[in-house]
Figure 1 (cartoon, rainbow, N blue to C red):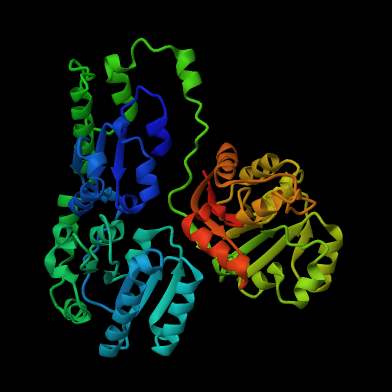
Figure 2: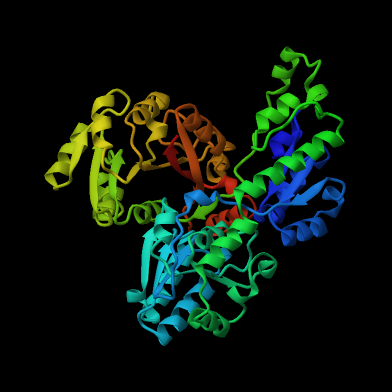
Length: 509
């Protein structure tokens, strides 16, 4: 949005504000709001707070509220009844009320030990994972919680649930609740600001006692939950609302072509083509030159982890994993002795692990140690890469891409393998604060075998060009208990983009 608002353009610019954006002061302050034609909020409470907080910037922009929506035909409806399976869909972090979630689980199990909570999501931040696993042990809840990890097929997951719980202290218009209700699942919703304006009050709890009361209640009506979604969050109704709002903006700017019908479906290209004078008389060469913008927006949502290897191991836990770059050249024996060797750590966590590397000596050593490994040149051996990527859940490429002479060729080889796995790529951050500290001393902190640097933007660009989308951005650093380490953590609090390195979770388009 920052980039688009500062780019010279004849296009209508409309922003969809979901929730969290209004609290990112740096991003909100960087947008050229006078170039924004309209705002679509997902909930009235988000709209109210945004206008209170940013009144001088948003008050003159046309606005509307349109709830999030689902395509109902993609959510199988089954008539359900009270039961023992309670689902949770989302990240596990402070923003999702993990502390309250654990207390709710504890109270439910006190009433009936048969209750089982199914977690579809991943931890964000090691502190929350350590806290959660610690408290689960202290409360003796290990048998009542099932961690499913990141779930791609949410409707299938919801099919086995009797309830869905949301303990967030803040939400906009949460899709996890909407999708569950579409499947006929009863929601148990914590009373965040605006919850009672969006969902029925008899499904909302402020205290743990109220949570237990709703859970135990015999008032369970799957058809009502489905009908509520159909009435309030139905794509067949919401998308035309978006279209009507955009048409009103075009009319306001005297650009709508009144002689033509815009149809009933959402079609941004159609709006652009029908915007008439707004696009007439442009100089194509000039427009092309103006479209180059050297201020590329950084991802607004990044997670910070303080241990790259621990995060990678946990991400692969219980999965079938292909580890690309499994040899730690020149340091493998030392790191094995220190239990700091990533491939060894992955072997202890993954259901199945295959390792590949171009270093034949290192591969020979690993084979002698009993590891399932092969020598592969990932830049040239496309056929072998295609075979090895079959039947794996995750492909891990840690601190490898910066060593390659032709990373684009490697990504092309990987893309042609036609797999459906997530890929985890980590690489040093070109804008690391630690690296910058050495430049004034006339030296560069870099491994002698590295061929290139990546930033969040250039890594995304490279992956996009070769057929991959990024679905999560993370940044990592190594904490240290010295003056520099403490100073570094303070700097990262203000600007996380100066972290040591980058982790992305990507998927083949």
